Length: 297
Length: 296
Image (cartoon, rainbow over all chains, first blue to last red; front, side):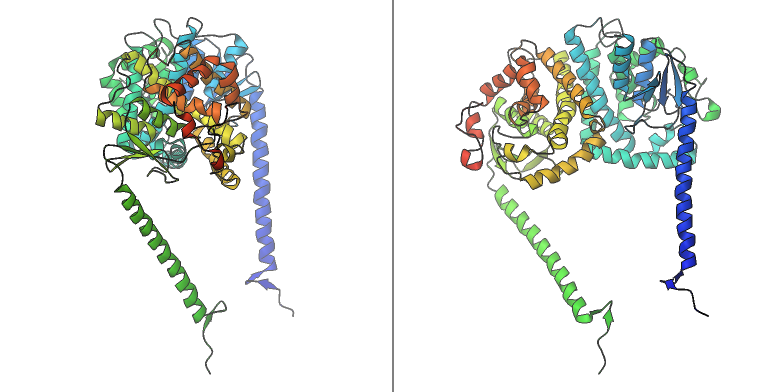
């Protein structure tokens, strides 16, 4: 009887089985992706007309979003009184980021691009009462907040001890552990590439203080960033500072906003009261690990 | 006669040779590094006292530096009248960046940290005539220029252009091969930073908004905050000068030269004020530069 041929001790039969398994897994993955796309398409057909569908990660324990950009975008929608619904999921945009939105079938990503899109589409202008110079200053401060202060917050939250970050994550302990670990890896790489990650803790602390001082000095005793009326720039400043207050326990950001720059703290509460009267309904319930209904510390 | 043992066809003798070669190379690398350190230490002993030694990458064809941060820092040193010498080399700081400086034996990296260090050490304050509000606005514009507008320039130079103009702008110090290698590394960095995720069209729109904001705020003023220059002018000049002199054919150049004439006037004004010897600070024709030639 002829013996079956073998390759490093593995028989033809074994190879066929392994090949079949790999092919089967590949087919299953393709089928799953197609099914997901089918479900997505089905769900998109239920989106109401002339209503923004805001895709963001879920609510937080203490704050409607543990990320500043969804909070910025949602505050803008409320400020501009644009009808919207939330779709809470971890689905990222085509650029691999969140939040993003769908409006009458059209997807737009990046919070500022969403705002610009809606401003153009719906003829909204929350900055119309500002002078050109004020708009230019507002633009500079928006960049300071979103492209510098933001990175100092990412540094504090992810570059060192993760205990505080884990404590505000609105997930069960196992998901918390995996997600925080996955995000930490990505964000540390981002921090290095962007530049903030190359500084020491002391140097970053200095940058944090400089940024918050600049914001505090410019705000002064004004109700909103440019006076008694809120404007579009207030959405992004609020989004970032709210995180400092409610999502970064024990951080220098929290200490500075809470204690050293009380006008910033008052400002954050003011914007919250003005545009988030239902704040308590927009955070997780105690059964979900949240603090809805609990007295704020 | 017993045959010599072998491992995957290699004899003991072969293995010893390979091991010896690897050990030899490792020793040579260590010896080279120690020699470099010895030469560095020797060189550092020649640094003059109370003089900033500004480490940067070398002069450009049309501009003293094809990088905005060395130009910013050197403009500051001139504005504050702090004695300094340049050490042009490819040595990077401990953070892997350039420029950096040495002052009386102490190394400092990051252009802004160098400025803060010198302000504190030497009691310099180029912003003393500004109000607190003006300083806060200046800080915001500095961040806009260095952490946002800067990245649109990085994308233009290294991703859309793939570093094509860098060899010429550097007077040949960066070879086309090096430019291509750098370009490959920068793309992923810009993606990580965030701006690299947008389309080219979107980035151009972002660029326009930044430049418009700068132009609008500057208005008809001589410098950012009026008739007297301040520290923030250094970083704005450092970046905008790149648009005029080291990014040929780019949207940055078009905007600075044609669409926002007040910015162009501003750049020339800062250059005339703090760089009267600009022509001596660019490469000579023999080095691939344009020193002495009429500006286009």
